[in-house]
Image (cartoon, rainbow, N blue to C red; front, side, top):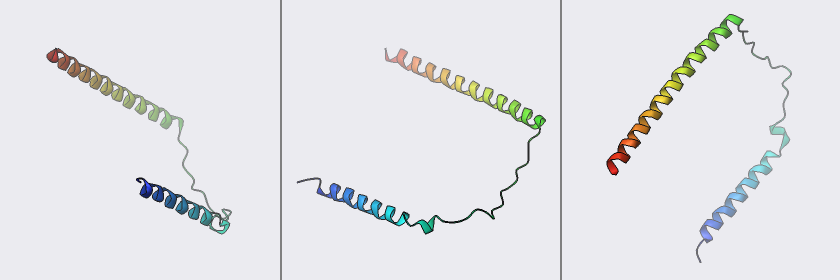
Length: 87
């Protein structure tokens, strides 16, 4: 009969996954304290910087939209020309 090899591979895979889960249940691997960890301080953005970022993102979004529209029109034209020549 066919399929014994694939079923054996599935059984082995399940056994390997179960053995990995058993190792993960060891709580000492996940224990630890974060009491002495210093978090990185990130600088705050000024309202002027935020406005500049917003303006830049608007410009980039408009450029991406124009590229998408031009690409869509080109693809539609290619499809229309192909259909015209086929019929």
